[in-house]
Length: 198
Image (cartoon, rainbow, N blue to C red; front, side, top):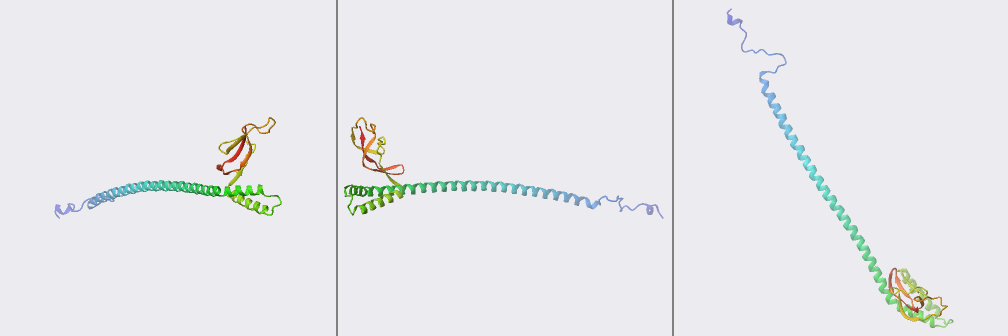
């Protein structure tokens, strides 16, 4: 046998157990690069998702604000319509009352002029009471301010009357009502026509 026969085989390499094979080195490097590339793609995806979430939240806030403004506008509209309807109702009732008050005054005069035993007196009284009740149902009431202090916003003075010293009426108070006044809540439809103590 020659010396060359005893020499170790040059084609075989001495490797320790568990060490990567020479051909395995580049595969590990490619895998690491692939993981890094995938991590970058996932990071970009998360960033895109966060941006989309922020845009969605901003859009939600805008829609919520719009809904709240619309609700407030509708509530204001509803209140305004209710006020206008109530005001129109009062104007209509007031206009009708102005047309009916002369007839009511004439019925009062007829009752004052009728004899106590007149058979028509009861019928006239019933008609007058029905008209007054109809006005009361819509909020219209009469007032007769005898003894009250004269108030130009509620009363119309048609005369003044001097009072004796022992009169219960002080100067400037209403001593007689020629024609009762009518009002609808705080609004005067017709002032009372009165005589005021001098």
